[in-house]
Length: 190
Length: 190
DNA sequence: TATGTAGTCTAGCAACGCTAGATTATCTCA
DNA sequence: TGAGATAATCTAGCGTTGCTAGACTACATA
Image (cartoon, rainbow over the protein chains, first blue to last red):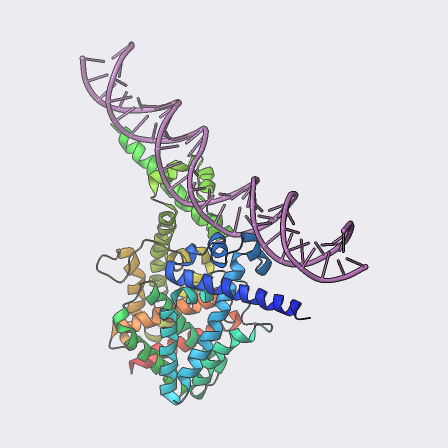
């Protein structure tokens, strides 16, 4: 009987719609506009239904964040593809900032809002590793301790994204800052 | 008559107590525990009194953040004092991370939570400039475009602080990452 | 056709930021 | 000194939030 399967499919589809609605509302009106009641309206069900999918509101944010980690990994890999050495570093750095600044709410879910995602440990989900590894890949040719260098590279990019997003550094010299970071990564190698 | 002066003093003292209470609670239990009712209890007044001091809850966070900007400027200047060149860069970088990681709630108010503070423009308050200038001072010997280099240096430090605070990078290799950033700043000069 | 089970909804709790309007304390001036 | 104006403060409550207990409904099994 395919009844159970159909129900499973419908349930999964509903969950997808919750996550998609949360993301759209967050990107359009900010995360404070993403309320349980609003999401319930959006999927045309009552509020308790949301709690049969997610433990609480934070878990919904986490689900959106996870989507973001999958997407940024793809974006970074794409950016690295076809180029090597210094150019690869620059392309990846630029892609990272583009991603962060074009999807501010998504990036916020990934890095700012409280989530239950685990990092930097053995049980870190592969989705969360993928982006890090894309950064590591382009950094590798230039350094001895890849792990440390990648963490520093990542931190620089995250800092640039956050400070620019919150209006603390000048938007019009972004490429100069990127150039500086790229030069630092490349120079640290020799 | 000193009556008006006494009242002004008492009012200022009460405002100080509100800010101090907010900071203590935030540092102990997180910013979500900092509610208007809780602060009103703490200063032994009713809630509306708080709104005679601050426009809304965000303004209280901003006041705490401003305190943080004053303190970090002092910490960075102290760290730079007495050393020069490469050592000064390293001391300031270390002091920045120590400050951020020892006062997580304060740092969060300064950089993460929504506030009405203005940055990177003509009417930026001097308190907000001071820290930036302390960073600029130690970077200056090593670069042509000081403004851009300082922004990048700041971004790297902020990224390191944030990623470590949120458990995304390994705490036990902090000094290696700092060394790398310092090397990058120094190398970018020549 | 009766019974058990999953799924969903209605209704409401406690806590939140914030505020209108009543109340109390303080100052001014005849 | 006492009456009226002004300023400071409080009580009480609005609308909204995340979350949930308990009622209800639809469906599968016997």
